[in-house]
Length: 229
Image (cartoon, rainbow, N blue to C red; front, top):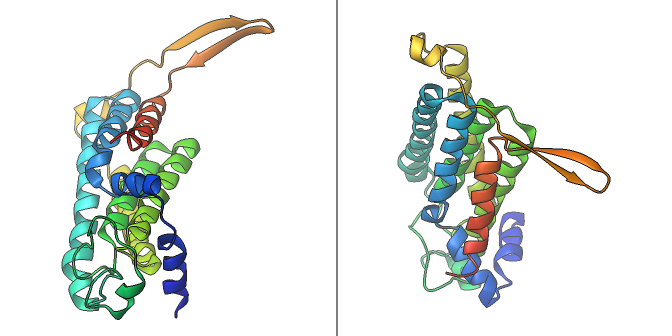
């Protein structure tokens, strides 16, 4: 058994009803739609409508290119079956949930590529260390869910994530370097960051509603939502 298969079984081989419920929720891209919208809202808050809309177009382009390259170019070339595919002898060791086995081929992972294309572009645009850590943690959670439900080897996810991250960072940097010359884009500015002062026994404190608050709050609510679906 290869190291790839051993690590896969480490993530796939221990199931509980609660984890099954959570991972089925977290592995679906539709679960994260509110988070995607919240990220766009944060871009508007920070950069204004014109820049945020252009950034959204770039992000969608990066995700679309990553998905096409992995699904339509690499998978037909590499022909590596998913661990859960019944034609794969290794599938006898794989635990699946509710009969979900995915498509035939899994190298590279489109989920990982698309998620990390989004992450790479957002990290490049926002330049926020805290937001970068949160985005990477979310991306790793999505990747873990793909192994837990049995449809990807770790190397599928590693290759997909690397492709997506490269495309996301590359396209975002190209836009920042060769940014559009239109006046509306150049003059686009974010909104005022609201702050609240409050007092405690040992002094006064200020709470700033930074743009990062929007996606982080929605992300936490989405994670909690997985407990109740």
